[in-house]
Each structure stands twice: as C-alpha cells, then as structure tokens.
Length: 172
Picture 1 (cartoon, helix red, strand yellow):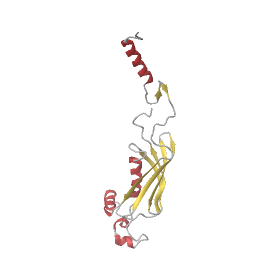
Picture 2: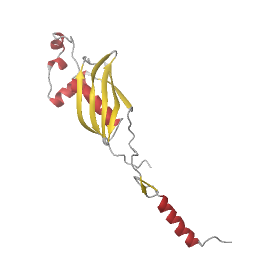
Picture 3: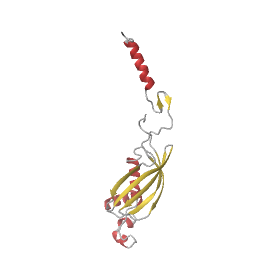
Picture 4: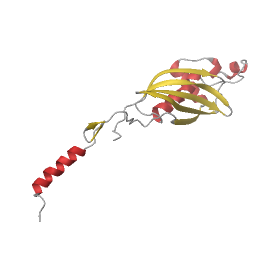
C-alpha cells in the first residue's frame, strides 16, 4: 500500500524543508528576538604576550615620528628617573588593539574610544601581558577593561569601547 505518490512526497518534503528552514533571526518562520549571536559575552577574556625589542621601539619611532630620546638614547635615559630606555606607551597600547582585533571580539571589531593610564614604565626586553575583559555590552557596543602588566607591575590600565563585528553566520 502506497501512502502517496513520489511527486506528492517530493512536494511535501520540499514544503517541510522550507517551513523548517532556519534563517537569521527566524525559527520555523517566526521572528526571534533577544538572541545574541555574537561570540562575545560579559566576562569574556583574552590575552597576548609580547617582548618589545630595541628594534621594535626604533621602528615605532620611525613610523610615528616620536623620537623622544627617553625611548631611543641609553645615555639620555640614564639621566632620567627611569635610568634606561622605556617602550613608548602607544606601542604598549597597540597590544590592546591587537588582542581586540585578533582574539576577542576579533576580526571586524572597531575601536571607538579609550581611557587609559600608564602607571609604571615598561623597559625594552621585558615581557608584557595584555589582557582584556568585557564588562558590559549594549546592542553592538562593548565596554572592555584592559590592562598591560610586566612581572609584578601594571604598566597600563583602563577601559575601551569597541563596536562588535556582526556575526558572519547565524547562530540559529
């Protein structure tokens, strides 16, 4: 006994597939709201480690025009309270941008604003750890706590605001 013809079954199965097809923001054809498809959530963390070399500092100086002898000249640096050359603050801050743009939230993230404070020097050759943690999300904007530390000292800390990338794929 045949339940239905092959043509009827094909049409019926196509209708079912269409009815149950998942589209971005829809389940079974009904709109779904308040589902966050982004891979970022409050409490999400990421980090990056880096050791800046004299060559890194020199290259940064050449690219930006910041030729402050405190960063480049050992003799000059000896006469300061730091006693040796220090890494440019904005070079350290670049690690925060690297974490946000490559790890979390990742590609497509847009840096909107920042409020940072440099609390200790980072010397050339010291390993620095840049950490970020999402503290608030509203719509497509995330507020992120940032810090860079070396050994037992915090060299930079603050908060940044980023626009989150749209998820390339639906989470449904």
